[in-house]
Length: 314
Picture 1 (tube, rainbow, N blue to C red):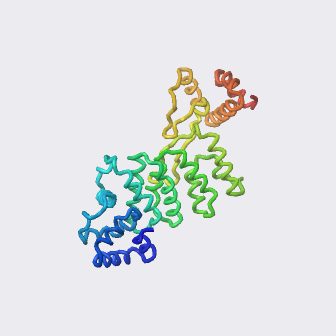
Picture 2: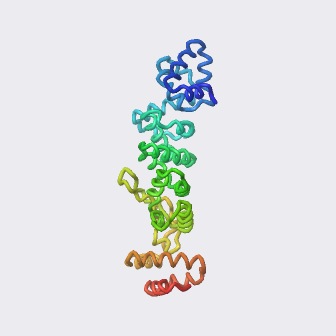
Picture 3: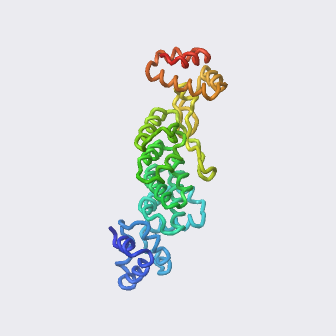
């Protein structure tokens, strides 16, 4: 571990500033070597940014450190040029991945982490940061801290891994983790069932449903900025009925509908919600167990399909 990081962790941010000034006054080259070391973590650089400015040593910094401080200033100044800068992904990753464990340093630092996460996900389509974001979300939620922006960034990745990570939190020993996970997984039918007796049973039932329906789940896009109980993902009953794989990123299909399918969907949409669910569930079950019979069944009139589905026969 870098000496400056170790000193900060042991003595705190304010004492690190004093100690760095003492180091610099005694041996400038040694202080700069520690600051520019490849092992330095971003929180120590952030803590020392005002000292770096006061001492006038910005030009003596490594390229990485200069870039990180430049990004920090742009984020704090709401500089939209960051949206168009495509060559700073590695620096943003360094900021987040070495900085997220020190979340709560101060309000500005947390704001910096949030906006760094948003840039990584929305500008750079980075999914390697999802573990860090998930940790941030739940550690902040345990403390009652602000999570809306970081949850939005996490979900906007529209990555199936997000659903799996949320489901695993159902097994947490912390009740706050479980409650947040259930809120974000509210699209899973069993998630708030009163008949489930243990978190293990809830996890197994939820993951079984998710695995079975993953091809028909899509990102709905609601978030905490809009409602306290956002509908994060949804199940496309239409695509489950036609066994047509859905893009997780939207309610679009991975292929275009044929003219016959357009007509079938039109008839499907005229049904009440209970009939739609019955048909989609039966179609999925039949397709898995006997694809030949499914092809025959799906070509029948919708009234015939309903009659067969209600009988439960294959």
